[in-house]
Length: 288
Image (cartoon, rainbow, N blue to C red; front, side, top):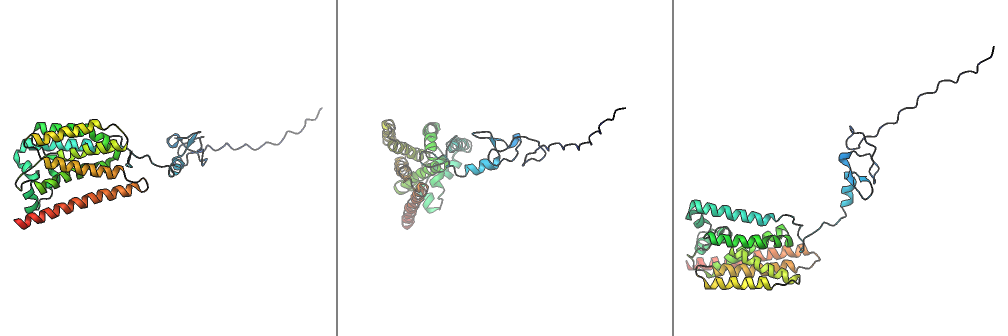
């Protein structure tokens, strides 16, 4: 009889390796880790990196030091010129209301020096830029805005472009308040459009572009302004001067603290126009 060697004692079972779960979604298993913090992340939390993936928190942390892209003159990048399109829609809607309501809405919104000064209806100084005197009138202004508006909105950004448009319109109304007969109503976005014409010229000069085309367009429209009757030359000239000066201040603002200088220019333009308007209103009231 041979003896058998004693059998080895039973070995304890090795515990199964725990499956890691996403640190943001504990119910999701994953074997992928963030390349920066090495925490496990699920497919919903993976963000492409130069090598592998990163978690959302590390991506956000890394973006803090990145400089945000800006437009040519310091505004936020514009992908869709929504301000231009919004103004176009407002013009068309208001014109439709004019067509339906007749002269009622036109009389309420038109720029009328006596209404501004004697009735304290200062809204007319801006609302006049959104009403028009006929189909040809609104077609020309909307066409011009559609052509040059997106270019300027992308150059300046939404906020600066909005200021440029509205302040140009206000500049046209301010000159009309000073020069037009008290009982002469005026309507149309032409003051704002001429301000944009001047802005395109200024921007082109700043960027060393060929500005002969816009210069010819401005001259042609000025000739039309003074040759044909029933056209508000005050609105055109006032808008052109205001838009050109403001665009120059925005385009040539020093790059150091450019946003501050541009906001000061916008605020300064509003203060100057407000002072001119109040002085003229006071003069009209003194004569009433």
